[in-house]
Length: 256
Image (cartoon, rainbow, N blue to C red; front, side):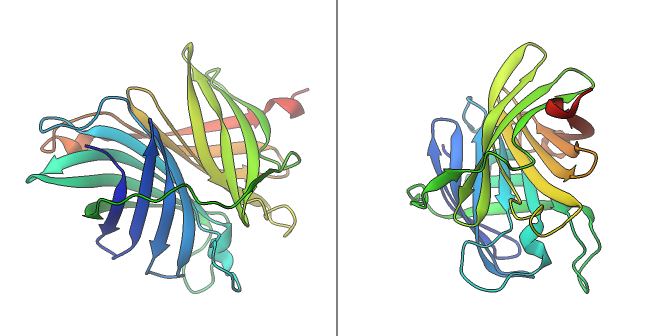
């Protein structure tokens, strides 16, 4: 059982994922609100799903469309999803908590903020794509680049890449003496557009899967994140699969 394939949710949005070990990548196509094709990356726990328990996964989604055209405020947003791949009535199912980091107001839609939803995806095709072929270029001066530390000592080390016009994040998270790879997305246009906040979403996994979603305050250099951590449960117990908390990281480069 794998997360690879094409998945459709109750809004009829589709997500096509490929897997390389525990790393996930692919494309997301939305049919609600703004429409387009978007970059999605993520991580899965090592233990696969079976008929008894699920496989925790976390995903990060950049809402800057990869399609050409004029953007709107949602192009500055990011989303994180965390939950499980489960077998429900014999069918592979992704049951995910979704947090949307709206870094700027979208008049007529919603003010800036973090918005929570629950999404269920059913697999509609088993074929998986190759990783998008767009050449990645480093963005060394991006505000998200570097080392970030939380009050509990958790340490993020992030490198930012340009993937088309979307921002891709690679790096690591060290917490409680353990280190895990991080993949994610961020709004690389925020500073140049004069925004106060830059959205970011990260995904990491070991025996659990965690999505960290929020914004960087470009003035104070504080990164405030909603953290969704999922562990393996049965399908019947999936209502307690994901816990939520808040974490603030500060840029080490800016420490006195």
